[in-house]
Length: 220
Image (cartoon, rainbow, N blue to C red; front, top):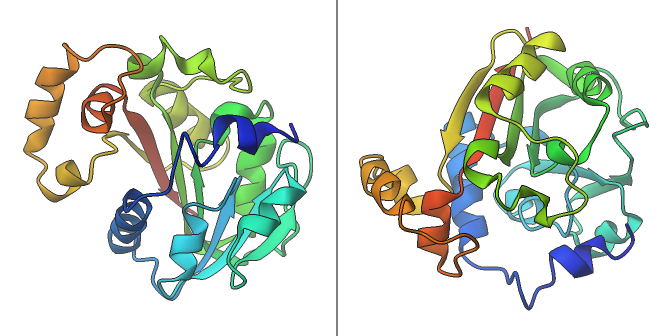
C-alpha cells in the first residue's frame, strides 16, 4: 500500500488541473459547505480537501497512509486512520459533513464505515459519497487492483439504508463541469458515450462514458 499514491496517482499521469477547483466549488454550493466542519475520509494526495481548505471550509482529513499528511495544506487537520478496522479519531457529533470520493469501493467492512460516519456526524450533518458506477465502469473497474466492492445505484442505496441512513438520495454523476452548469448536455454525453472506446485519453469523451455514483444522506 505504501506505493499506492505514486502508482495510481502519479502527478505526471494524473496532473492537477482546474477540475479540482470546479468540483469543490460545485460541492460547496450544492451542499452548503462554506464555513462548515468537513471531514474527508481517504484523502489520498489531497487534491480536493486542499481546495476545500482554501474556500472557507474547516477541513479535516484521514487516510490509511501516513505519507498523505505531507501533501496537505497546513490548514487541513490530518489523522492517519484505517477506516476498514479503526474507529475514526474524533468525538461523537463532531462534523457538519463527511465527504469521500473513490473510497468505499476500496473497503470491505461497510457496516463499520457507515456506523462510524453516523457517530461523528452532527444531527443534520451530511454524508456525501462518490464512487465509480459499476454499470458504466465495469470493463476497467479492476484496473485498480485495490478495488474490492463495485456499486450500482441499487447497492449503494441499500448500503445507506442498511446501516442507518434511511433518507438517502442516489444519482448517476457526470464528472463534467459543463454538465453541472448546463444539465441538458447530459443528452449529448449519453449519445457520444456509445462511440467512446474504453480507457479513452480525451477527458470529455471518457467522462461522458464513465460515470460516478453520488450518494447523499442527512443524519436524523
